[in-house]
Each structure stands twice: as C-alpha cells, then as structure tokens.
Amino acid sequence: MIKEFNIIVVGAGAAGMMSAIEAGKRGRKVLLLDHAKKIGEKIRISGGGRCNFTNLNTDASKFISQNSNFVKSALKQYSHENFISLVESHKIKFHEKKLGQLFCDKSAQQIIDMLLLEAEKAKVTLKKEIFITDINMIDNEYIVSFGNNNYHCESLIIASGGLSIPKIGASKFGYDLARKFNLKVIETMPALVPLTFSEKILTMCKGLAGLSLEAVVSHNKTFFEEGMLFTHRGLSGPSILQISSYWKLGDEISINLSPNINILQFLIDKRSNSPKIDVSSIISEIIPKRLASIICLQNNVKGNISEISNKSLSKLSNSINNWFVKPIGTEGYRTAEVTLGGIDTNEISSKTMMSKKYPGLFFIGEVMDVTGHLGGYNFQWAWSSGYVAGQYA
Image (cartoon, rainbow, N blue to C red):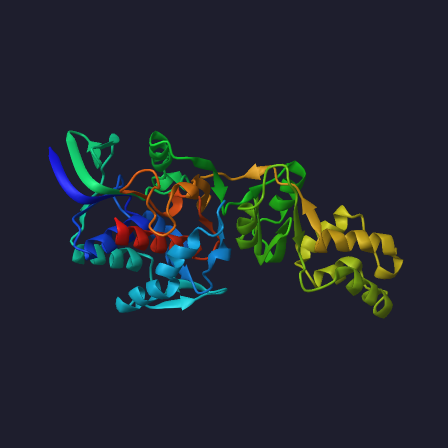
C-alpha cells in the first residue's frame, strides 16, 4: 500500500509531537509514527511523574554541544515563555520548584494530553506500534517502509530520541539513519547519570545510602551546587547528574561537602573557643552525623579538638571542602536521563533543523548533539527544535 503525506515525523515524543503539531497548523498533511504502544512515556515518567517541562533560566549556556551557538536560533524562535503560554492556554496549573524549574501541579499526563489534543486539532495522523524497516530517498521524495506499507513524503522529520532509558523504548534508530545518509554522528555517552566508584568509596557510599546534602561538585572549571545523594551503587543527586555530562573516564571530580563554611578556619576557631569538645561532634554541626563519623575515622582524627594538630585539621578540612574522588564509570543508559553526543550539528541548519546535504530531511530533539543541563532544559530543546522543524518542513 502506498500513501502520500507532506511530512512524516518519526518519533512521537516531546520533539516529534511538537513538530507534527506545528506542521499541521500550517495545513500540511502530517503522519506521526511511533513504535510504542503508549506514546510520550519519557514525558510521563519525568520529574517524578510531574514533568519538569521547561526552565525560566533557559539560554544557550545551559546546553552542551560541539557547537555552543547552535541552539541560539531555535531558542529565540520558540522560547520557554512560548511553551508556558501553551501550557497556560490549556489551564494546566504548574509551579516553580527551584532554580527556575517548572513542574505540573498534578501530573505529567496533562502535558501528554495537551500535545495529543493539539495534534488532533492540527489534523495530525498518529500511528502507534509501527516498526519501520527501511527509509530511502528517491527523486527528492522520502519513502518510509514498514510491513507491506510504503509511505511517501516531501519532508521527513527524525525525532527518534537517544539511547537513555531503554526500558521505555530508546533505540539507535536515528543514529543509524544518519549514518545511512552519510551524516556525521558524534560519539554518544550516557549523561545526567549517577557515577560509580571502586570498592573503597563504594563501601563508604553503601554505609551512607539514603543520606543527602547540598554540595558543590566540580570538574575542571565546571561546577554545580545542588543536592548530592549517597546510594548503594555510588553517588547520585542533581549535582552529580549535572557533572556527569562533563566528566570523562579517568578524570577526578572535586566535592565540597560544606560549600558555605571554610572548615579549617571553623575548626581553628572552635579549638580556641571550645577546646574540650570532641572533633567528631564539631564536624557533626556542619554535615550529617553519619558522614562526620566516617570522615573522622578515615582521617584517623579523634578526641578533643585541643589535642589535634594543625596538619591533621588541615587534612580533615580538605576531605570535606575539597574531597577528590575518581569515578570508575556511570550507571549507563539504563538510568541516564539523556544522551550526550549525537548527530553533528554541523550537518544541520540551526535556523531550520534541516540537513545541509539532504533537502527535506530534519533532525530534532535528543537525537542531535545537543544536551541540556538538568532542570527542564532538555524538554525545552525538544519544544524549540520541534517548533522550528514544524515551520520549515
């Protein structure tokens, strides 16, 4: 069976639905395909089920790409304010949690329902549980094949996502297609992902599992000050997830477990003012008691503060203000929120999201070499890149 469409969108996630909606609004005949039974699963599970759908602080500095300027045009064409207006027009209540992060008051399903309703209004044809077997370009037309069906289109938008969270259907489809069309793909890696450690640090993490605190986590000149969590598998929490997008295997990271206090000066002052107090008790005033006990034990520091040398106090303070650790890896795509790397942005027009080599071939969302920080930025990239492709396809 052969069917003709103006546009076929592959992938009915955030970016794919957005592009299909915008193209449909322009009167284009749009077919939206997805291999899943339930679409928008990544939206549904995000933000603890409430969907951190954008961030008030969105700008180009919140994205990682080999071309740091690539995102600017799309973010200008469709900003976080534009998406907030769409959410408000559907009477969806939301709140700012922290650091500009916006979440639905009720459920992430509200965002999915909003997009489905917009797609219906734009007369988008949606087909689920479709497994594409081949895509070819013949005579300036794209042919998408699945089963005995060949669907033809003038413009093809690839919004197939990255490799993160395979249990909800992540695949390398978009990368394979790009390579088939001889487009460069930047090496992919898990990003916004917990880090794993060797046995010594892992034993410490297991003993502290469930404990969280505010920490500054640094790699080279990049740092994030947010929550950090000890787990049975290593270190997690927002600050760790953020730095994972910058960390490379073999590198150390630095962790400041007490960002607002100079521990050495604090200890010296305490020794002058309260010489009879146990050092572990003093450290427990600053960081959780369990963590304080382990750090004192590791540094072989015990007893009254008056009995401890400056050298020992300095070593102890460094292990809190400047704790160097060397991760041995990450938890991988299984728990990664996004994929680092992807289709080289040099292959794509930043104004239109269209391939520079193949007219009518567009790439949007996570499949590209654009990775946002934690906090709603990756969703905003989906909305912005999807909007842009929908205007030009």
